[in-house]
Length: 296
Image (tube, rainbow, N blue to C red; front, side, top):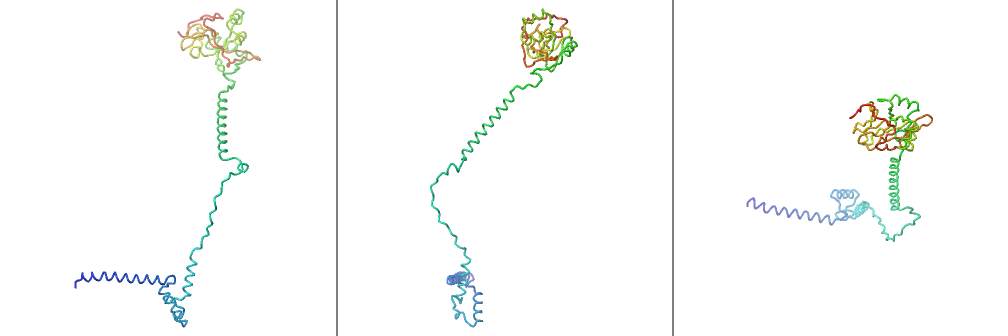
């Protein structure tokens, strides 16, 4: 018989024998159940029973020679290892919802959020409005734009007499103005009363006129021409006499002016009250050109 045939017969026989052995082993386990003991355990039990003078059959032997006491002990140990039963409460039946009393609730969440939003918005708007009003509210600072003290009568007269670059011209930076002497003879004052009025005329009667440095044409600063003894604008050539009355050029009127007052021997210029200059053709002093122009 060839080797191949032997192998073809032997392999199925080996598989069949293995299946029979496995089946018998599983069957023995099923029969033994919870009281199944290993071979070594049974052997120790048999040796203990023999030393006590009894055989496993005489010692109330059970399946495979295991005593009933051993099976009860093992069953008790297995029961102790089981987790204790968990008590499950029966579910409570749902109840109808009833709103809590208003006295206990107080302010609801919705009311709190609504009121908070309104308060925050009102606070923001109020703060913004207050800041805008504070920014736009006129505040006297004591400088230009308010009543400015330029000095005593003596110091102002001295500044006018020693004025530069031309005599009888004096500039005061704190008022941004030229303080010019105004003739107080009767004829000149009569001409002034026919042209001017109000606080500007009152200052002329005191012998002063405060001319704003800004040209009424386009706002350039108007300097003094020492040779002509006039004010001559460097931007477009407008020319004014010593008291700011227009003589020539594109300016629409004479130089603007501020009121001048004398209080307790001090000269004040109210730079917060601007009076427009006199109309074209006004000449109350009769001052003509005293020299060549500084600008053509």
